[in-house]
Length: 101
Image (cartoon, rainbow, N blue to C red; front, side):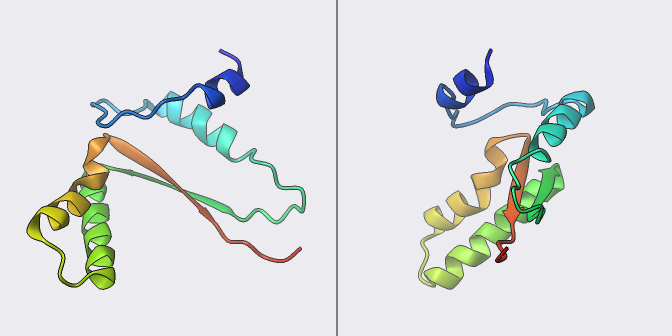
């Protein structure tokens, strides 16, 4: 599959099942991610790989943020926020720190 085809025809799935990517697959993904366009050589990207109990901790962080924004969060909504990261066996998070060139 060509890269453009993969990017333009991708679909999201509501729930992914284990296993997550292998070490070799992760290495390929990380190599590709670190080649993101960076015309100013600023290297503003950081990537986190979260799996296992880290997914539950991330869910608690989502819940905390949701409660800060909406203190009267219902129990159903609270459960939804806490469970968000659990829809996949692992998650990559991209963090960008934008700075002036």
